[in-house]
Image (cartoon, rainbow, N blue to C red; front, side):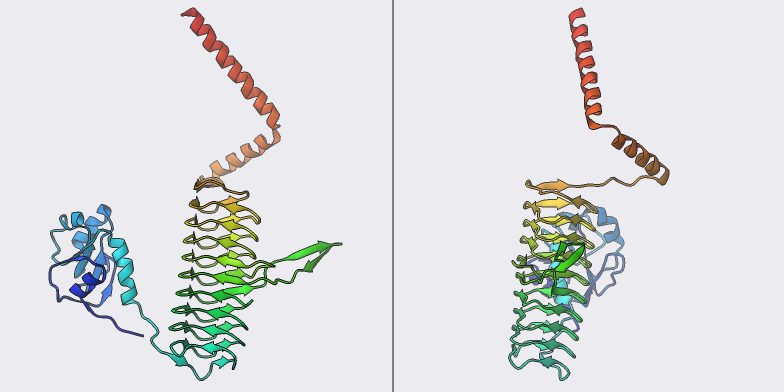
Length: 356
């Protein structure tokens, strides 16, 4: 692991920002406004944080020009158009990185595997026949790459990850602890009261710059591949079933479940605990709000929700009772009552006009 120490002018150059203040100020880390000390750099992401910024002990702040003009208590700044983006860029430079290269003595690697000399293979990792691991990829301890798995360049595969099913992982992919890529999809054919297992013959294809969190499952396809395209980001505890296709730069938050053979477009957002049924399509640029259930194809961009909002318990119980009562009323009866009410309203409007 590495230690970090930068001068303020170095950090400003890294984000192409304007330096104001002490150029040789030494900073050793990033911190929140509340916790920052004199050797820390923090950022101000909008007017609502100005009061916190005024009293912050941070040695320097990342700000916009407009925010800087309102912070008279501070003297060291990096001025940029987007402080949050600049902060994101700098986190990479303060990150602890695995710099070791080579293969640990306890790792088990098949003779037919092709491992880059610039890769790192951690303790007790197991790499199967005909696997490929690219330059500058880090394979942490206890990772299992099954036969014919391919991992590209500059990837990070965290401890206890399993990659199987002849999966192919492109470049700059990060997969975190205990996730399984390419496990058997949930496919069974019912017959005479029994479930008959369908062997999953497809694979998993993961594009460039994909991030998959801890304790996730991405199942291999039954026949066609499960595909995560470039830039997809996935939180912890997410289930992606067989033959799912997820478009570029789509984000999926924790505890989502996507059933088999569903296609999700690019630039979508699935908030926490969203459930998606199988064999449907979701268009590009769709947002699904938290805990929604998607039961049919969404063909137009926009934000979609299901379920009901939070109530006090007493109010919720009354609401449930009324919903049940409504469900017992035939829809045709409700429609007829509404039509009758509409006719009465139109008749009253006509009478009032005639009197004028």
